[in-house]
Length: 516
Image (tube, rainbow, N blue to C red):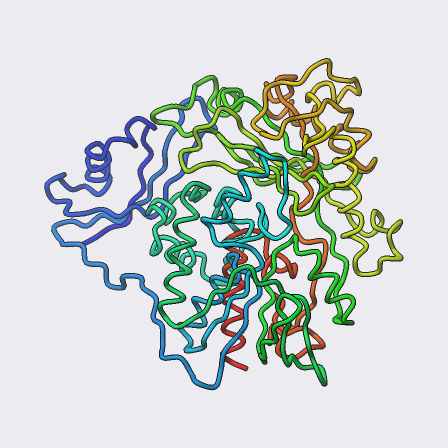
């Protein structure tokens, strides 16, 4: 027989497989010798009290061999001769759309403007070593999309849209550690994602799909409100009746193309602010009641939210043991993001700290129509570049100095490799953003004693939290509301907010094509 049971043990005990087995035996009123196998289903840390505990939910097999009745695998079908789909973008939405299309017997053709993972790495190195940005290959564009080099967090609340478990199993199938299947906040790590993404692409090609790099969508041809073909690199025509647009949240040229082609899009609210970075040991001491992370406790994370003057101020994409990365996609702008390696063992902890922005903020750009939110976003990033010195240095200010309105005499060490430029962020951030983050910081310090410190630094700008454009689609068919055969997908279209939700949306679009 087997039983599901729950145990609470110390972090040190959680690192001891023998003790876990003993605790499970006690919880199920059985002996250690009778337990033939146990499968962890959920694992989380409860740090609400000084005595920190690890919660484990497990299926325990007692005097019964464990045989997985449904081992996870993909089931590609023979490809139909008369049906295929073109996917723009090789990020999570595009890759998972392609994998699902193969299961449905439809050939996927992925068109990616950037480079493969290996070649892309050279361009990322050039950003920090030479302060040069390749507009087609950077932290946002290239194989795996923004997700490959922005941490690999897999936590989502998008379960109603599709199977989170299936997405996690696919990542595991292609090389992710098994712990993503049961950790409360699963995380792969930027150092491991490239190999996983490469394995996915190789599988897609082995099963008859195509993946083309250095191939930029430059035109969309439609007639009688139906997709006919696309143009790649201004010269190659690819006929298609099914086009999945999974370009990610930073493909501004695609938004402009749609706007100029009279394909209906809308300005969309998003969030904007800064990255805040603390030494990791400060966050550990706060969250673990004076204890340090180490062999048994992972680097601590946090989640903060506050309401200021009718708007939310909240932490976003928190990276324990992480790095602040330069995420600009064009010359003349400064954009920052964060990521962590799988071990989360860097000295610093960083998080986005952002404010909701909306139509009232975009009003000065209303002449831009559906691109008004994009124009607002672009203006802030360009101002950060102008106020940041040179060579992609980011404008920055110590936390307490920022909140109390005084210039920082110096800046602390920071993980942002292009370097910081000492600037009053009131000169960089829009007033509606600045005053709300400033007001929220002391409240966050009251919620987390020790958080409000001048050992922390704020780095501008965290502006690519989500797409500033929504591409409307029919709720049933998932096709664009006016253009048959055009499937807006993932973060860039406004229908996802992270790796897992984008992957789920990619699968949904694939299924919509199969059912059309």
